[in-house]
Length: 425
Image (cartoon, rainbow, N blue to C red; front, top):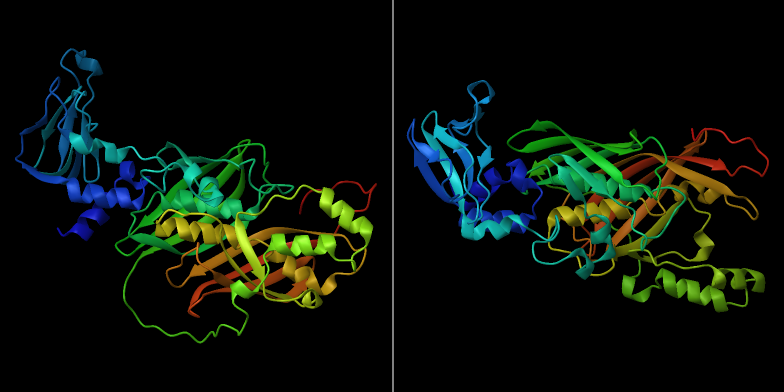
């Protein structure tokens, strides 16, 4: 097997899938191949552990310790992708492991056991605090195989409920950590069911729907208080060469360096005499928390009634160099200001509205760097029946179409005081 084949194999071992891709590649360089005949001992009870042993081909049997009563001595069979050993010099085997058939294993020697202990799911050496706030938001705690816990961080911008982009990004992160690192998301389809609570953890349960040579499919359920609040279907693909064309053309817009960011726009409004003094005073007193995404708008305020919005965006701060992370960041950012574009033609003085995402789909066409500028083109071709529909395209600075999107959202007039509360939908 060549190095890429070893990396791909190791990426399908559940124990390793939650590691950063860089760690799996380093493990692929460190593992040794060992062969055993049927009946050979691979590990003996009480002997030191040589390292983490992963079965590549064949079958092994685990026998309970000799002092276990006969009726309580279950035997276990280990197959491809199964593993044993802990990779530390201080450990000794608690059981006997013997080859049932001819057996081939990858062994990660104990001196490389540190490769299994990483700081985050995205970075082996550095803690989240050294990186972008977005990377901290998208860091999940692995509770057990295929179950993760995410949080709404107090430093992140707060909405009435859990931000839809957070659910998409964290659920995609959970799914990405159950496939091999050579497969990256190429499409996702999300359904928002119940508004999430910012003050509660979110549990992400990943279901492995399919694992193929080129593609893998995952279904993720996000839960709070035992209820499913969000579902995501994700398809991953191993990179391959194929036919290519691009009919979409990036519009001629000013580069981001010539445009104002949100903080600069806010400062200008606070000092602009064309805005009423009361508005400026209220805006100045309101706590302002910068978004973890930097945005620079291509249109002026005169175009706010058009059913479209174009802006450049990128992640603030440093991101780890993991392609899966960058796609999760783009997924997070994709829901910012997205559905609100369908309300633009209907905005008028004094009109209060609210919108809630119903579903959200994305297609990743090419590699994407979320800490470099991307142009986000949002258009709303239709609104009807309390639902607004928006489409999106993302281009990199070279004019390549990297992502396409669609979303439908609930858009309604805000309830007036005294109205009887009703369910969300």
